Length: 141
Ligand code: 5GP
Image 1 (tube, helix red, strand yellow):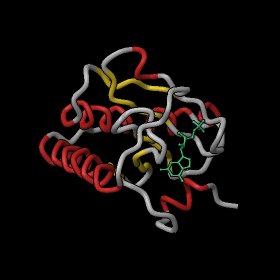
Image 2 (cartoon, rainbow, N blue to C red):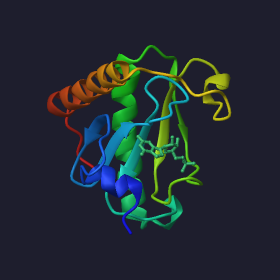
Image 3 (cartoon, rainbow, N blue to C red):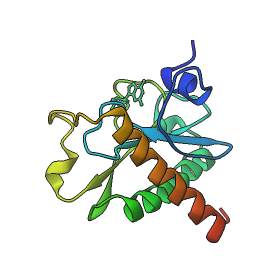
Image 4 (spheres, protein in one colour):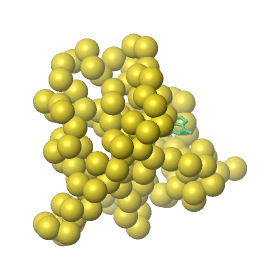
């Protein structure tokens, strides 16, 4: 059965998309630890991230880097933090979080309650910046 993330990528389940290319998809986490908390996933469904072939792992992290750069430009934060767990959803993914302190990376903290319009506005900001960066300085990987 397709993972929930494959169903999101296929458009069967709605998501707040922040970036996409032919092999990857990035969208806001539905239970954000911080505003702008984003998940970056390969379209190729593999459970455990370190089971990805080396080239796919490298491409995923390069795509996540571009998403993080766009996030850093439009979200008020000192850094974009990175985490990989994958204990809940068996489809490899990278968490990206706009952070100002180590405590912002606390996955046990109460999740942020953001209204749909706030989620939509955040996703649009990141999406627009990602696409602007792709157009103005496309990277050759
Ligand atoms: P992990 O597998 O890394 O432990 O966590 C999975 C993450 O996916 C969680 O942060 C959870 O909130 C998020 N998540 C689970 N289901 C959905 C969903 O249907 N939509 C979105 N946007 N995020 C989800």
